[in-house]
Length: 175
Image (cartoon, rainbow, N blue to C red; front, side):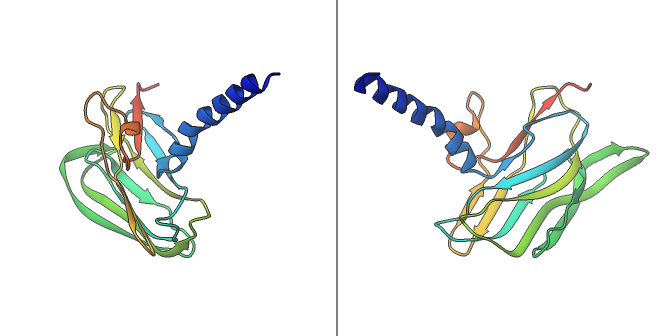
């Protein structure tokens, strides 16, 4: 193999890895798709801290229409939730829910910049058309600095067009 061919091949390999590295740099959801109206296990993946320092707090905003939220406690972290009124009543089995969790916070822990971890909650997703993306804005606070993963793409753009995109799940048709 010639030196030129080898160099081009190595450049292609490096370039093909760049989108993956960029994706891993954000706070993301493990499952990118779920059926509309389903119970969804949201696994927020945190791959790094801020400015080389440890993550100490992770807060997630729950969007309107996402109901029956139950966060998973995490050893070494303090779990708190904020509750509020929904804009409308939502059906949840035999109940009409009018209020519920609107924000989850895990704080007091220490996730080193060099480590990776997951923060979990479950919720019922809204009954919206397939293709709708439901965004969960996240604020990641660190010993030094903060990441606000809150940017929601405008029409015609994707999360790749933003520096700190909010994690989202795309709704699919009900099975």
